[in-house]
Length: 448
Image (cartoon, rainbow, N blue to C red):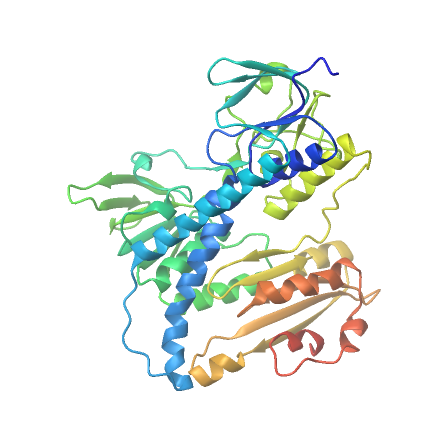
């Protein structure tokens, strides 16, 4: 019998922490997890899942309009934010219950409280209880970054946006990343007047330039306003509840809500990491090696708290790899090459592998294939919105090193296509595949 209270103590019950906990327990480890918020973490409670449900809700705005072109006698419809909000939150509650049930079924002890590290193998709960563990895993994820300026406390983040009491008629969204563009599309479809304010001059850094330019063009056509290279100066709350926003070199804006989508930072403050010698980088992320081990041998970390790739499936892979390696006798290292990603904007984006710019810098000679087309549904609906598919190929080997797409169902199509990129298939392999007609996905095997 071990001298420790637990073989593994996990701080944070998000996607990575839950996966690590249940897999370690299935390998026979005695596991406990502490979660000060809600079991499920960012993705389930205040991220991917509720956001995607809002995206589904927003799509009905265009679907209802387009249905008339397809012969449906659709009456004028009214959107009720409260109904969607409450249904989404109810689904989040259901999923939280399932996550808790999963931990319970694997006999993982759950402490619904804050835990801090007070030694290399010791944690302290909020009530003062101290527990020991042979190994500690930090899976506390990330937290929205809010810039400091006068009145910034009046802004909300992606944590609070799902709980709005009413739909804002005018909303300002700060940031140019995927969260900003996703919520811009959501609120625009719900009928809000949306303005994106970005202190830089581009949206979606890291995505292919042609794809992000297409999203910008479509977003502006849909009525979303953009302000580039504009820092915030202050936010004032008015007596009627509205907000007056002062931006540099701009007239004041009157809005009903300001959403800060200015990035996320590793959630490492105040949990005792530095006190026990865990090394952090300049952004506060825990430095780990390929086995997810920190500078303190008994302390590990997975997920967004390590700031490697901030994606839920990556955190899950890391949690699985940690548990299999440490408790399952199956040394596993996560492969971070060709990880697919998506932006659930309107329309959505899917991407895997190198952008054109990255390929030219790293490979020298590349071939680019594109298809710029209107989806069949959009043609009949009278919608001029065009999809764009782009393939990046290593000219020396014919290997497909990148796929980038914007258009209806792009993430769904990209997931399957990402397997081909991961497998190192060539443009010739795509060319030899018979098209599935009529579909949007067939454009991938017809690229010229």
